Image 1 (tube, one colour):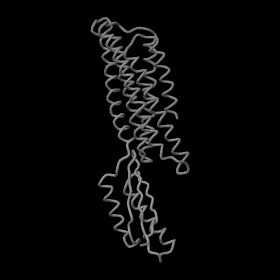
Image 2: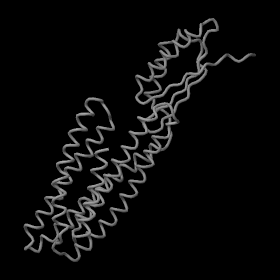
Image 3: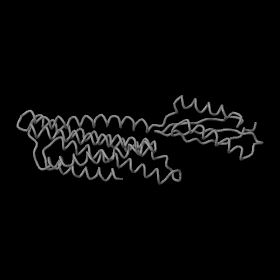
Image 4: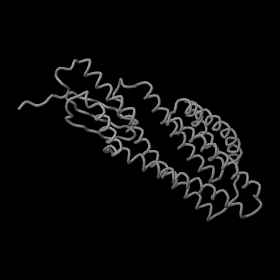
Length: 285
């Protein structure tokens, strides 16, 4: 929540700075900041949904929602990249010195948010180590990248101001904005690729299928016959259905214990797996 609020405020500040200056790098920073804010906000929404609705609602769609959001963000990144490229190209063709009160607003914002993002990075890093959370680990990397971006833009503006009396310094600003655009392009491509692939359901990897067979073999004495195994992977989640036949003389409590042992063993060895074991009977001839 803190990261979302800080990101929203940062977006407003960089937007104001962009409107009150003629700097391409501040324009690029505005789009980059908004993209980062939206990514943090989506992650926060996902965490809230997971914490509020664990197993009591139909939450299989959370992963799909997250991946669809990733696709939307990647497409928005490409639009931002186009605008940044056009702006930088114009500045390359018609170089000019940067000016306007927005420069000083951006200066102050870069220093302030470099400190905030560093603090948030250290906080997320500490929490991710304590809870072994991939989401918090990704958030830590995001805040580290944001802090590095603040330092990069501060350096770019400083160089443009210090060497303003040299004509070649007019190219520092558009060159820096193109570097930011390049990072956005790389991130957009990676996000689009991963989100698109994870939206497609697919079968489990052969290594995971072997794990299922091994666990069923270990517990072979607990059931009588295997009537079928169905599995699929959707994003980071794996859904496994196993249909077993148990001896008729077994008590219900014994059957449940056997099911629990098999299910727990498979879920422990296959990350993100949800195992359902169904009871079947031998068809009459």
